[in-house]
Image 1 (spheres, rainbow, N blue to C red):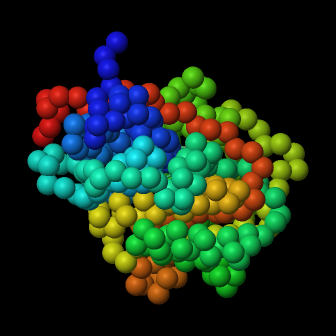
Image 2 (image 1 turned 135 degrees about the vertical axis):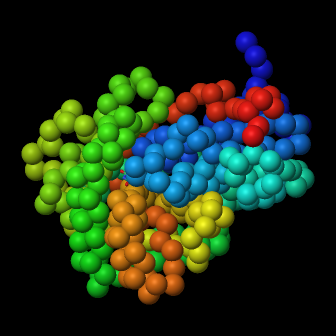
Length: 332
Ligand SMILES: Cc1cc2nc3c(=O)[nH]c(=O)nc-3n(C[C@H](O)[C@H](O)[C@H](O)COP(=O)(O)O)c2cc1C
C-alpha cells in the first residue's frame, strides 16, 4: 500500500485527514472538482477539468465556488493540526488548473472559531427536505452576515419585498434548464448512480420530488425514482440569502466559495440547515435580473435557503487518495 504524501511536518495520516475534510465541501451535483498536490512545504489546490459541468456551469464559476469551499475546509483542517495556513489565490505555478497554494505560516493552537467550524464540517449537508416553521433568529442572522464579511464578501438577506420577484426568477430559470436536453443529460449523469457511488447525488439526499406549486423550486435529483410523499409541504418563510462579491472574476469566485463554506458551517454550528437554489444564477438572463435586484453593483454568487431542518442524509465522497496529483507528469 502506498503511503499518503506529507506536508508541513505532519504525519501521512494527518495529511490524509486534512484532504478528507477538504473533500467534504459542497459541489455542484457533488462533482467534487478538486485535486491536491502535496509537497513537503506546499499544498496546491487544482481544478479537475475532467469534472467540469459545461451545461450548468459553462464558465466554471461554480467549479471555483466548490474549490473555494474545499479551500476553507483545508484551512480549518490545517489549523486543527496546529498549522497556520497562508493562502495565495491563483498562484503562477505553470499549471492552468492551479487555483491556490497553501504554505505554513507557523505553528500554533487553533482559535475557538476555527475549532467550532472544524467540528461542523462532517455535520454540514445539503438539506432539501422541508424545514420546520421556525424563523431564524436575528442573532443567528447576524452571525451569518458576519461569516460572509470575514471572507471579504457580503450577504444580501432577501427582504420580503424582493421575495416574489426572486421566486419568479427561480421558476423561470428552472423552466429554461429543464427544457434544455444538454442540461438534462448532464444532470442525469450525476444522479441515479446507485448508493455505493462515491460521487453524484444519491436518492437518499435528493429531497422530495419538486412540485410546480412549491414556492422555491428545488433541482430534481430524484430522476423519476421516487414519488413525493402525500402532504409534503415546504416551510412558509425560509430565510433566503444571496452571497455576493464586488466583482465577477475567478479570484472573487474562489473568495465566494470560502465565504459560502464559512457561512454554511456557521449555520451548521448554530443548528441551522441550508440548501442551495442555483438555477437563477446559472441561467444568464435570470442572473442579470438577480443582479438588478442588487442594484447592479454586486455579483450574486450563491442563493441559499436557510432554516431549521429535520434530518439530511450525507452525500458520498471519493477517497482522499483519489484526489491527489502525484508526480510532475500532470503539470501543464
Ligand atoms: C456552486 C454550487 C451550486 C449548487 N447548487 C445546488 C442547487 O441548485 N440545488 C441543490 O439542491 N444543491 C445544490 N448544490 C449542493 C450540491 O448538490 C451538494 O453540495 C452536493 O450534492 C454534496 O452534498 P452535501 O452538500 O450534502 O455535502 C450546489 C453546490 C454548489 C457548491
